[in-house]
Length: 383
Image 1 (cartoon, helix red, strand yellow):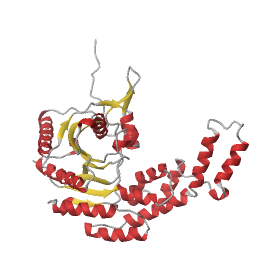
Image 2 (cartoon, rainbow, N blue to C red):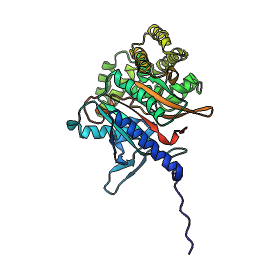
Image 3 (cartoon, one colour):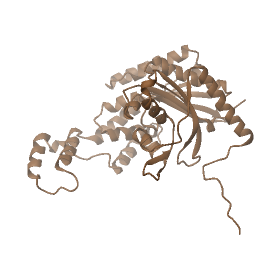
Image 4 (cartoon, rainbow, N blue to C red):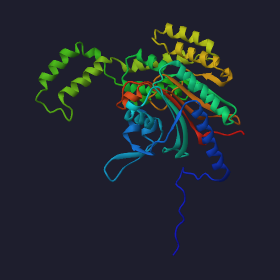
């Protein structure tokens, strides 16, 4: 009887010999480095409730989950990242944890992807770190740790997603449309798609409403009459109250299409400015002031950059990109990607940022948090 050969799953690779030895050595070196800098090691389960990663991660993560229902009826998944598990651990043990809570972790993560489905992640988190000192510390440690393990030709691209959110807040857009704009703004800035093309894409997705609220002079009076007339009529699955709330919401956002276009034009005006060094942030602030956008993000970004330079980070190691966004939607302020140049091509080997609303979103107190992680499988060791 002949048996069929069983191979590894697509996107899952064996790591053996010298490659495995080098990978374990890199993890051990990083572990020792961050341990010396006060970061405790934690090991979280590979299996978690799916809701842990769906609640705040957005489509970038939720659509790539290896999820299933176990024999007890629970919706669980292989972890696609580790940060939410760290937040869960903190909330469950908050009474016994002193802040700031500095933690490091490492282990496999799993995502449906076009190439690799399993990657090894190494990351650090600071829960309770609200001050700029913690942002500076993490960026400095990211630079120092790469030097420690022998990585050359890397740089950090730094931005502040708070600026993008502040610009969007100037325009009357629904929360869904704001998130759509944040996830697609880089395509507009990089000329991958035109403003018209993005507007058409939003329309096809049903995110832009053509309602002209000028037809409803007094929404409250209209709602009252509508309710009285339709009180006993069948209105489908929605209740009268739900329908009225929807109409009131539409009335409160009079012309989302024009506002969306105005928001995109504002982005193009501000982010098309080429920033070569942090001193040019003053010019960006003047441009923002002329656009009547209320934000402190540019000033805080400038202070952070000055601080990390004063702490010894080379100016060649940091690039500024105020239009930088992250696929994971829980970021609230500072965001950054870490690149390594391999050959002529820069590759993303890690990144992170600030996510001050994540602890509260998972049921904990309103505690700030910040962190970053490396994809160890993407790092090219030079030594």
